[in-house]
Every structure is written in structure tokens, then in C-alpha cells.
Image (tube, rainbow, N blue to C red):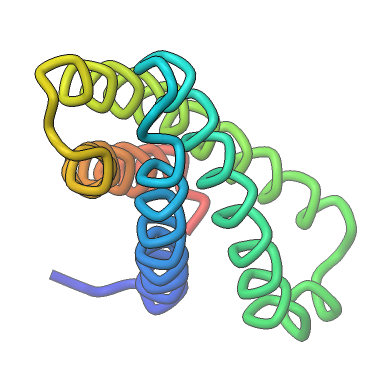
Length: 141
């Protein structure tokens, strides 16, 4: 099996951002422990998204800056559309799993910190699988 270095680098960045996002989300969830479960879940996920996309945007830019400078604009646009669609499908899966699991865990009175970390780990696993699969199917990488 041939490993694609660009896909490996992308997955490395995704995992790094997910870890940072998970830790900050868990902290936010614990801070909001007195709030209703649906509110805690929603705000925690929003905070996680802000952190994730902030870090991922920086890492993606740094990893691909030289590569995109050498590419034709048409190819860049085509690749970015494939990436966006892959991430979009992954985000739908992630959000559905993450929100429902975290809400459920909070409702059965698991500590918010633990509920956030466990729901993040499960949702991220599915997210990475979906994004990697879609990127391979669309031949983006």
C-alpha cells in the first residue's frame, strides 16, 4: 500500500488541531457546567470549532504555501473545492455525532469535562475516517 505524504500531512494537522480543540472544549464545557445541557453542548462545540479552524487554517497555509504558489489557479480552485466538500461531509457527520453524544452524556450526569472529551474522541474518529475516504474517492490527494 502506497502512503500519500500530502494526505498524511493533512491528517497530522487535523489530529493536532482536534487535540487542541478537544482540550479547550473540555475546559469550556466544565466552565458551563451549571447551564442547561443543550446550551453547554452548543457553546462548547462552537468554541471547539473556533479553535479548530483557527489552528487548522494556519497549519494548512504553512504546509501548502509553496505548493500552491507553483500551481495554476485553475488547479488550486479544483483542489480547494474537493477539500471543502470533503470537510463539509465530514463536518456533518462530526456535528451529528458530537452534539448528540455530548448532550446525552450531560443528561445522564457525566462530568462535562469527561463528556466533552469522550464525545470529541468518538466524533473525531468518524470525522477523520470520512474526510480521508472522501479525499481518496475524489482523488484530491
